[in-house]
Image 1 (spheres, rainbow, N blue to C red):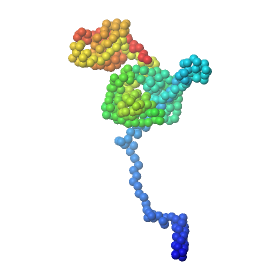
Image 2: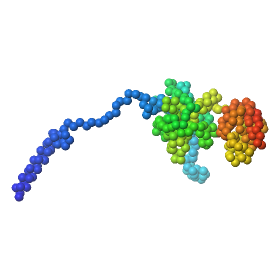
Image 3: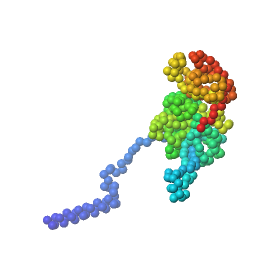
Image 4: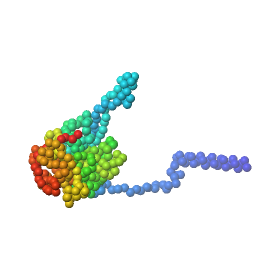
Amino acid sequence: MYRLWLIFAQTATVLLAIFFVVSTLRPDVLSLRPRGEIVTVREAAPVVDDNRPDSYSKAAEIAMPAVVNIFTSKEVNEPAHPFMDDPAFRRFFGEQFESKPRRRSSLGSGVIVSANGYILTNHHVVEAADEVEVALVDGRKAKASLIGSDPETDLAVLKVNLQDLPAITLGLSDQVKVGDVVLAVGNPFGVGQSVTMGIVSALSRSKVGINTFEDFIQTDAAVNPGNSGGALTDTSGNLIGINTAIYSRSGGSLGIGFAIPVHSAKQIMEQIIQSGSVVRGWLGVSMQDLTEDLAESFGMDHLNGSLIASVLRDGPADKAGIKPGDIIIAVEGKTVKSTSELLKAVAALPPGNTVDVTIIRGKQEKSIPVNVGVRPRQK
């Protein structure tokens, strides 16, 4: 029995030695895969035509260089500790808990609209900022000066002194249709420049409650914090809107974003560049939309017009004889269907001009000449 065990041990030792030598010198001999086997894979052919119908890379390539990141900061005085209001606490701990100036930073986006260095962005992006810095895609950075802003449309104009700026081409936002594909370019959450795609889901959105004057393009392209002031472009890379706000319950995109049409933004920008602010017409009244009950009480069979709720004393409307309870249905012969339409129509009137305002008073229609005033600047 001992002899048999010795022979088995010697045989196993020799076999293990042979296995070790072969695995070291010729591992391919022990491979279970047949020698010389070739693994084949399928690869896509190189793209020759850049105009692919399923890609918007060309539009992004055109628009992205003109969209800048905007960094703002302002100095604020914050109490270092809430107990600093207590004189005894302040006397005991001394100056180490005194209120000290601190800098707060925020970021947004902007669009270069002129090779001269003019940049369009949102008023709320640069509001109350002490310093504004812009960063271009090519890595350049520069301090920007605020030319002016308009809180009522949430637009602002900046200017930088840089050479060879890649200005974007302004598109035809008044020809945009629901269902058109659009791209949103900006700097969401500070992660860096990003492009998202969606469609135009609605036009002429008003009564959103964001600005005084609203005429938004609504889109489902993802727009998030940091995108404010960025570009909304068509599929050719032309600017059609300035991304302004989103409807959100969480702070992130829910598929409802709002952009200011570029044809409106261009008019505001030109006024700001020329005079530093926007001058609008003003009647000195507060207005409200007609409801079915109000229209019935005034004996009207339609809801067109705007009800005058109050009249500012010694304002243009008061001097002209317009009274609370009057219903304005037209300005210079042009029918107004709602308060927002009336607000925009009056704002477009040159201050100092006399215009005919058509009202309904006591179920009778009459025309009243009004000398248009200057709309006070809103805070």
